[in-house]
Image 1 (cartoon, rainbow, N blue to C red):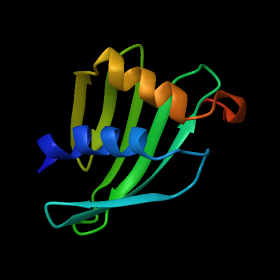
Image 2 (tube, helix red, strand yellow; image 1 turned 180 degrees about the vertical axis):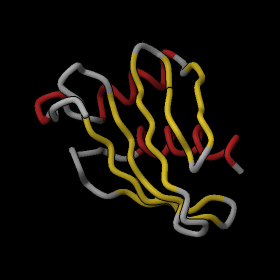
Image 3 (cartoon, rainbow, N blue to C red; image 1 turned 90 degrees about the vertical axis):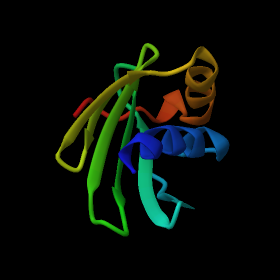
Length: 101
């Protein structure tokens, strides 16, 4: 499941306009996800959420074409396409940046 979660989550983030701290939800392969997408003060994007069907929490940090973070008890790290990075940059407003956590 985790190998499908992260790309699905990133595509879902880019597919709908995101305002800082708005709760987004989607369902994929029977699992329901809820998350927020925030722009941090350093310009990176942070996705925080939960897999509702399993209770696994996730926190993903997206910057410079990379995603690093944690899903449940598993660390994840991988690259993101330039196209998806550009979509995320457009969809998560920079003018509502949060202080870095």
